[in-house]
Length: 266
Image 1 (cartoon, rainbow, N blue to C red):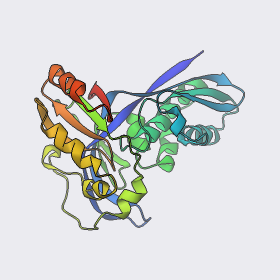
Image 2 (tube, rainbow, N blue to C red):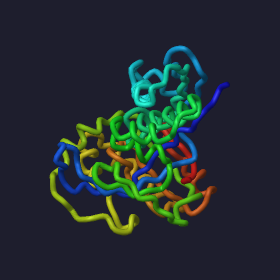
Image 3 (cartoon, rainbow, N blue to C red):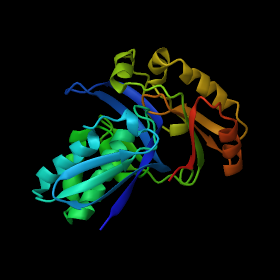
């Protein structure tokens, strides 16, 4: 039986970097939100774990990626002898600040949990070891993240669900590690209401990919845009819109050399 799981694009509506944790990771406060569109992971039972990749950004992925790492980790944690023939449809740009790899790994965990008929607690136990964003992507629900982003509190904000959003990326991959390495180390204060927040990684990301500034400036000029920010460590930026028509008009007007995705928040 072939099953499939969505791997929705993740947005950081705000991202405050507060310092360093004892394990060397950065301490952050963030608000995760998820889109209705993104990558897709499908699969069926097989003797071994395998992965095929297709889609617009398939060529940019290595054969040894986080989906396979997630599958092997879950297999070992749950003591499963079966495998799975997995297929990832890669619709999102790689290394783009919208959780593509983390969302793909989380989707693989959800899919294999169903395929193998195992307790979902195994997926929850494995997720933190795969990356700080993977627990949030496993839920794919609006949540506040603390610690390294892996201590989660679900947030019920009616102003988020169903909001039209446009994602724009300059098609320049950006390393999360390189961006954090350029963070100035200054704690600008805690996260309160997300619309009043900020993304502390925007400044260092813009030094590496100046086109981020061009995208943010362009999004601010779009009619109906109510909120504009860079997501994660970049380079994807996004704008929330008053309505679907305004979002679609902006998507039509988006420069051809930028990737765009017109979607909704979940």
